[in-house]
Image (cartoon, rainbow, N blue to C red; front, side, top):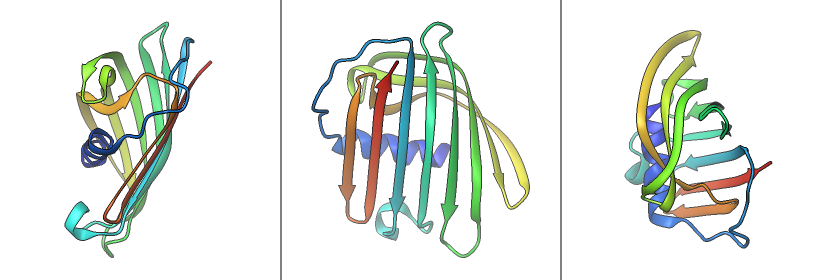
Length: 149
């Protein structure tokens, strides 16, 4: 969902807290992400929440993401987002010199209807640095845990 990526990048850019230990090496990266919003002045008419995980493989520069999304606006309901990341890299951006960028395709299924939406390159507002990141802004809560193996 491009709207979900936009909300994630905006929140992460504005309000990241520094990780306690900002050093990691490895070839596989795991990004566990969740956010929720219950304030229409921040998130618009959708009161939603998203939880899921990205896996990024350094050796192939590809990855995947699997998320559950639930809108509480009385119209859309819950669904799933599967992301196939055809390319990713870290470079200068909103989260500093190691900002994660992704390119790929979202397969979004809501109420038994599926759509395929290409995206990117997208600055996801998170650095390629192991640690815990969080933000809270007037009814919007964001958490991310980044680790490598």
